[in-house]
Amino acid sequence: MEAPKPIKSERVYRFVEEYAKDRNGTQAAIRAGYSAKTADVQASKLLADPKVQALINEAKAKVSQAVEFEAAQVLLHWAQIATADPTKISRVRHVNCRHCWGEDHAYQWHEREYAEAYERHSKDPDAYELPDLSGGMGWAHNRPPHPDCPDCKGEGHTQTYFEDMDKLGPAERRLIASVKKTKDGIEVKMRDQDGAVANIAKYLGMLVEKRELTGKNGGPLAHVEIPAELAGDPAALAALYGKLAG
Image (cartoon, rainbow, N blue to C red):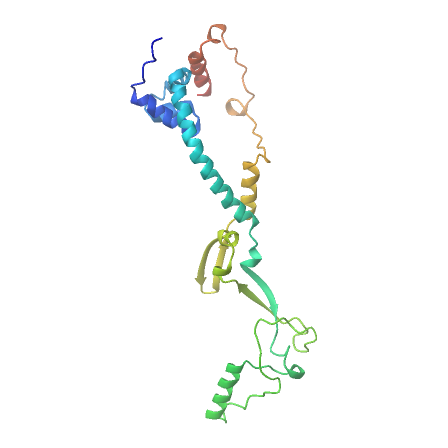
């Protein structure tokens, strides 16, 4: 049995490489250098060739391995964005006022703040009064409000809090798109979590897109009878399809 002759055309190998990328024969033929006018016919002929099909299968196997790896990375990227907890990055919290935890709800001082106030009084007692220490020391800015505080009525005041990025998990770090300092403070932009969920749903086949096909100028699709003499000729059928599709 005579061995099949090897393919010598570089354009054929180029077609195989291009076809393995998107499985579009016509576009692969055009990218490989075939005329756009006959690309659909050339693609049909090439795809019908067993030697070309063997090369395509080899190329598809190589691309498949790479694409599967890339797809897994992309899916992980989406999953991290979709499942990240935004409140671990930034949140608004209620914290105590200066009277919440002071003795008898008098003004409570932070140690360094009191030392600075006392030093100002010592240097210029006429301008600065002796700071009142009746509320005591130990004020901490992040304590919760006292429910019975007569000054803030237990509401305290709101504070925007951003977590140290080094303490965030992989999902929360992935959710952050950018961080920058503005005249109004720190601005954190986050990626689209709903979009990530939609991408995962499409990947898993949970969402099916429906498309309505119409004919020329939005009219109904025209019924085309395929001539009997073309039924067994793939190349001629491809040419007919290309003509109808424009």
